[in-house]
Length: 105
Image (cartoon, rainbow, N blue to C red):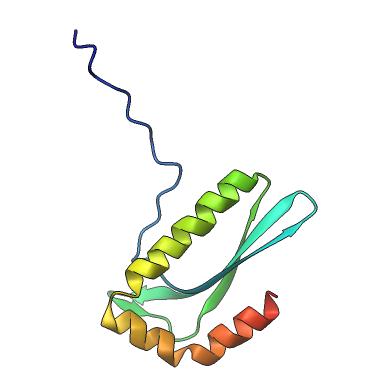
């Protein structure tokens, strides 16, 4: 048996870039809970996105898990913004993004 074999840890979280087009993300804490707010256009069909963005709130009772989720969404947003189509959609949704940011202050 080869002792050089090392255990590969499993990912803590896996998200993909096709289910949602993330427009903005924010975090709030209250008591012992952390809330991650995301503004995203959900996939309509094929490679099309719904024209009306949706706000989702994910709740965590573990700060480390909340950080992992928040940072993963930020990474997907960065990745998606490398696409010209995603950039254009985000530009078109500027007003919705502004309202979202005002609501989650």
